[in-house]
Length: 232
Length: 232
DNA sequence: AGGTTGTTTCGATGGAGCATCGAAACAACC
DNA sequence: GGTTGTTTCGATGCTCCATCGAAACAACCT
View: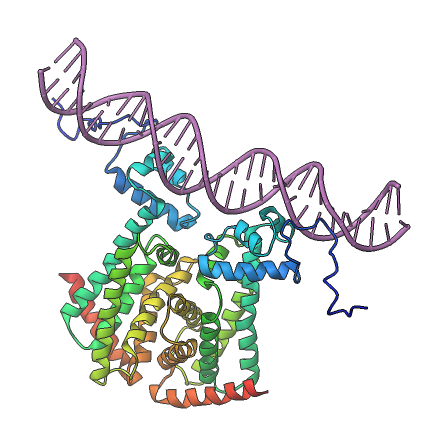
């Protein structure tokens, strides 16, 4: 009698696929994975639904059983990508420490996360701007992110650690910076993602600190907290 | 006898347009102007050729008499936008002055120029990445811009005015910064373009200077040179 | 065993957008 | 009056997105 691992995948309910390859996992996940890969290569408007479908062994129209519109796929991808920075501010704020160190940690980690993303976040950003309904979740989370970043900046200014800057404008610029970095990073960068992150964090936090001489100390503190955070 | 200004525009050679409105100027220019406006509103993939055509009083297929492909229109737009930063480094380098001041002037003016651009430079950037042939000119000019910026940074480092940074990486980041700023600026900014430019220049140059305390002096010097430059 | 229900997939189809082609409709010149 | 060159059009083919109804199965019920 065959064990579960030997047993061939049980036939699924529903009409069989024209493509004879066996169904590997959750089709929704398969579709998202294929879409992420293809969109990373060809861009959103450059990847036809038919291509995504054939990649997962389906016909074009069958995709619409899982997603009602192309943008729904894009929205699902961006929703996952958005988790990273949100989680990031959460843990960094929880870890505490001086605002400048928190900012340093965020900028570096966010830049690295964006650079290792398989698809172009700015491309998707653009689509999200033109479809506020489908991407309502995205904009809400992004506003939260901006607020939390701004509040870190505000504390940094109050404690005289940072120059006097507009917290809201600074938060926007930091996010735009990280996304801008991804732009040329994906465009064939000779620097590794980690180097880009550290460079950006140096530049931004260096530009915000009341005295640049504190930058090395800030970076060291960030290193230590990051190490402790990844160890657990 | 009617003077030149009273005389109706002389009939042009070729089949008359279905649209009865008189032809105002060079159709190529009209097309580019309409395309710039529409693409700014709806994005490149969001503006159909038929829309551009009807805007200038032509049928869809008639556009292909002036431009062979849609990307050719986009390339023409980006070629013009690219003139601004190139001209900018040229005059700023010619004006001379400390490297930090030159950088400050560039970042501020470039950010302002991008923010007042009618269309989304990142959107076009993305298309240019996927069509290196049509946009060869763009990439060549951009490489030149990077090199010139990098050389300013290199001098700044050599003169101990700036922190020790990678000049090439810095040039890339500066350009990405300016483009990133345009992203959220067009997305309904409550700050004027000038404020954005000054803020970005403060942040970037502040982050590069060996000592932040020199930032106000650098800004003042940039102000003076900009005033002198605009006066002539 | 045969029928019913629910699930998943397909094929056909319509509509929108890009691009090409040949011809139409003019002016200018011979 | 005919020829040439310029500008525009309409028709057409192709690709892509999205919808719809039906096909092809499994599972469950009698």
